[in-house]
Amino acid sequence: MRLKLFFILLTISFNLKSQNQRFLYEYKSVSDSLNRDKIESELMALDVSNRFSKFYSYDNFKYDSISKSNVDKGISDSNLKIKKSKNLYFIIKNYPDFSVLMISRIGQVKYNVKDDRVINWKILPENDVLGNFKIQKAETEFAGRKWTAWFTTEIPIQEGPYKFRGLPGLILKIYDSTNSHSFTLAGIQKLKSINAKDDNFVFDFGTNQNVSQEKYTRILKEFRDDPNKSIRQTLSEMEEVNDNGKMVNKNDYLREREKRLKEEIKKSNNLLELDLLK
Image (cartoon, rainbow, N blue to C red; front, side, top):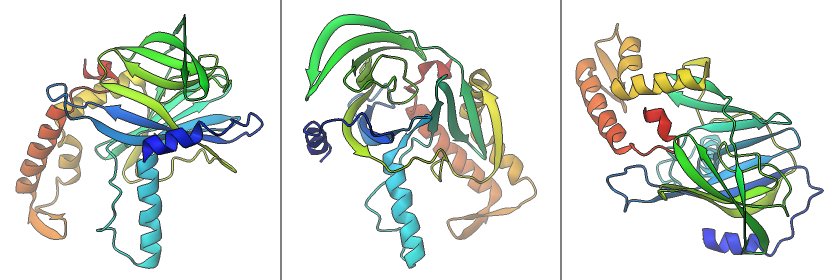
């Protein structure tokens, strides 16, 4: 279906006069470096206005939209065919300075992570064609990985998926040197308007903190070392907790939760930002 969507978009001329556009990317990733045959795929959205852009999981957007509609209609979500993505981050780039803010959640806290890193590109002479677009090659190093990008000046906006930006045209495809992470343009939509609000993708419960990229790296490391730290403090005065509608012993709950999370963390060893694991 996504390949069909890609070929449909290539028959549509890009309207430069339109202020609000949504660029859909197919994101493929290998989260476990020890199991490279397991490739995950999902749609991500890059919404671009004349003041800012936002990048997020389009699968989560669809999930939340359908879920909200079901709640309004009194329908259970148990039969939803769309799965909630693990990519619960939300990235905003403001213009014209291209300041980058990533909104993410670790444990009980939602973090607003300011990323001041500059992406330095090397534009190469190689040219190609992707669909109906003429593309040119560029390379960079970012977040512990070497990246190859293909951009088009036929869409003259200095944008791209995730935190990538700064080339003289839209990035249509980008992948790292180990083929662990790749984004490929899969569709274009015109939008009436774009809201900068992060909606429900990262959840609004718990506390909210503004942090630097360096501090976020330390916080993530602490979470990976002790994933129960935050919730253990929250449940300190309780003897039992509600686990999917069933009251269970707090210590048993924490023990099972830690075991499950550490297993998930162990298999999540190949992050897009590889330097977060240092």
